Length: 283
Ligand SMILES: O=c1ccn([C@@H]2O[C@H](COP(=O)(O)OP(=O)(O)O[C@H]3OC[C@@H](O)[C@H](O)[C@H]3O)[C@@H](O)[C@H]2O)c(=O)[nH]1
Image (cartoon, rainbow, N blue to C red):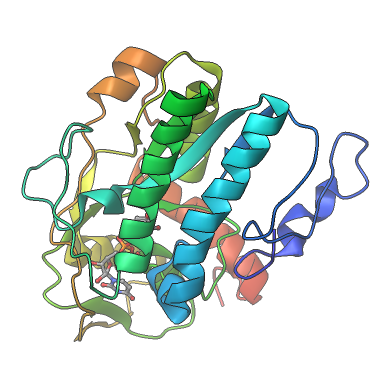
């Protein structure tokens, strides 16, 4: 981790464990270690963070992926890339299947991330075809859960922190745009199955339960703070209008299906946020 968005606090309980090693490193620099498997997850994933230094974001996706593929080639490791639902851009087919090539703006403010991940997928397949590297590609859909950075900026963490702090929930206009939210433990289970299985992917890993941002705000209000206000604020450019994974491949090839529904996952995240913010439930 280079700790650009991550936190050592999240790993406190593992530090000192004989089977755990933490290295401060940035994947845009080469890394020489001995490994059997590489989960290449490095890249800021929240739009506010990946847009903060777009040149660095694209370097992470291109040079970082080249470095990790170089490592995989040198030691003969299998490598898994966490790609993203953002490779579908503002999708014109719904739900999104892996065979859809996407509708992406190549010069927009999100391009450092969505085009960056598209190049990362290309590099993975070129190393596979040219050098016989064993690859796995997951296309992750919106994911949430405990231990997310409270100021991460993504919608679920924003709404939960706002509800706990009695601040208005900021729905970005028009509020009818949709997302499908996957709980973190389901995501981890999907990634491990993909790594251990025989399929290169790309495979969508996400929860097909689809919500508008207004519906998400209403759920957070009802479950966490019925008195909180919901307000409409300005959106950012190129915000995808709809997003929902087709998970037929994940079900058929990995035997994977998400278990945690949004209304069960939100309170688990609320508990963690309340502890870290120091605001008990019945304040
Ligand atoms: O406070 C907020 C924040 C966000 N939103 C809206 O919520 C929706 C989701 O926004 P987020 O910032 O959480 O995430 P996005 O879907 O834009 O991007 C994410 O996509 C999938 C992953 O690859 C990444 O985690 C991230 O890029 C957007 O429509 C956004 O306009 C709000 O309504 N209010």
